[in-house]
Image 1 (tube, rainbow over the protein chains, first blue to last red):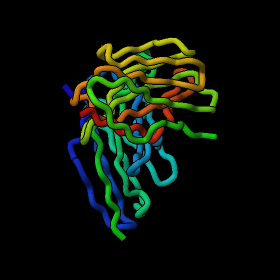
Image 2 (spheres, rainbow over the protein chains, first blue to last red):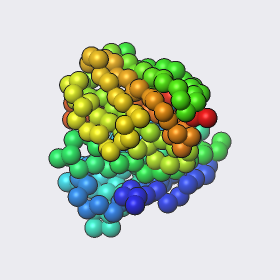
Image 3 (cartoon, chains in turn cyan, yellow):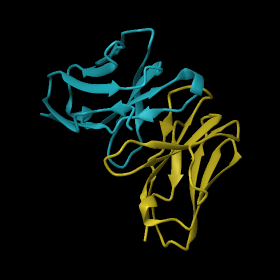
Image 4 (spheres, chains in turn purple, yellow):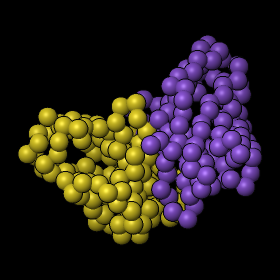
Length: 113
Length: 112
């Protein structure tokens, strides 16, 4: 039973446009959410996070939105750049369980120039 | 130094072999992790060490044996593995209770 789901295996976007990556979760006890990015032959790298007490967090070109009632979060990348092409993983945790992250299966983003 | 170094990058082993995966970090992190990732699946947590003590074991079979000799090193000892254990094994580290994990590039393991 996947508690964190990324239903789009891949996404293709033109350079300069907005990329929107989506993530749904089933466990309402999750209270912290993260996005990681992974290039081929490298490990995932932390990108941005959001606590359940917020509905938006912004860091440069990256913004994460959280809709707790829908158990949905999204990552917006504006403007998209070819170097953003990678696999993006959504992850979630319950703070009281320490660093037990549950990952989604990932979405492959391709930014075309 | 913000790297987590994993060796070897690739490993092929038979079901009767004993091998070890190694992980090293020099960021002063006191939490270290082993994750397993199969193709097109999410990384799955196996073990967490906090201050050199095993704090989480996600019901991993005993043919996987973790070891944390010191705060910079994490090993995963492998014995009598099955072909279905073939996967990418990722090591990560973080400051204790900090969600920002730093991952190594992984060891791609094939069990024949």
